[in-house]
Each structure stands twice: as structure tokens, then as C-alpha cells.
Image (cartoon, rainbow, N blue to C red; front, top):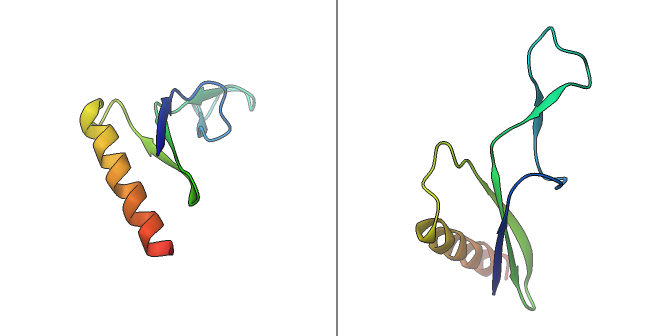
Length: 77
């Protein structure tokens, strides 16, 4: 199992929202999210998103992601 976390800059998985109703159509702001990519050899890949401003980060997040990934992949089998 490989678990790799990344920020949202430069990924296609990052949601963007308008800064305000009066802003230009191309003026978007990035929602504060953290992507965690999980790859289990022979099973596949999955992406989890968390919100650093709302949720605790660190070892607890890594363990939660690992457990959820195993549960999801076991249900698929």
C-alpha cells in the first residue's frame, strides 16, 4: 500500500469556486482541501479529500485513509 498526500495546487482533483458574485468569470479561488492518494498493488487506486481548515491532519488522517481504503477495496472484491 502506498499513501501519498499532496496539496491542491496543480492537481485536476481540486474544486475551484468563484471568489464573489461580482468577480470576473476567470477569477477563481481554490477551496482549501488536501488530496491523499492510495494505491494498493493488484487492487487499484483511490483518492480521498480532506479539509485542513475543518479536520485534524497528521497520523490520524493517514490511519483513517488506510482503513477506509482497505474497506472499500475489500467490498469491491
